[in-house]
Amino acid sequence: SPVESVLFYAITALHNLLLHQEGAKMAVRIADGLQRMVPLLKKSNPKFLAITTDCLQLLSYGNQESKLIILANGGPEGLVYIMRNYNYEKLLWTTSRVLKVLSVCPSNKPAIVEAGGMQALGQHLTGSSQRLIQNCLWTLRNLSDAATKQ
Picture (cartoon, rainbow, N blue to C red):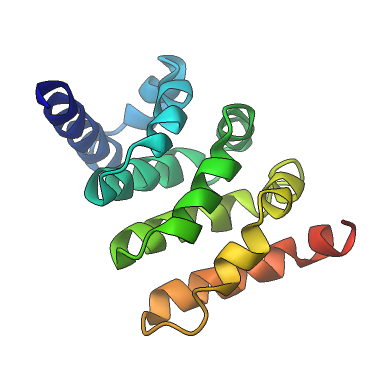
């Protein structure tokens, strides 16, 4: 649809700004970009989702407030759903990168575990993508203490 097409170009432009434009991350955070981005995880286009999850990773890495905003907007559930239900390697890799960042946050840890994150990550340990396996292992390690408290 035309709306989906505009959304795809918008998220692509935003992604390029986050990668290359000084101050873009702060501007997106101030404009409540994360609150608007997390619900996009419910879309079904794998290429769109790969760009969206990479934006989430760029915004949350090293920023605790962003991690909490992702949590408050249902990010862990959406990310775990992607890990469970898609097989596009680039999407799984970008999603695993967001989960890796969130997995060091004490508030996000239990949410990821409760959403079935351990199983969702575990199902990718036998694949052929080394970068995906590595991220899944790092994330599982980070989550392991929260999982034993369940």
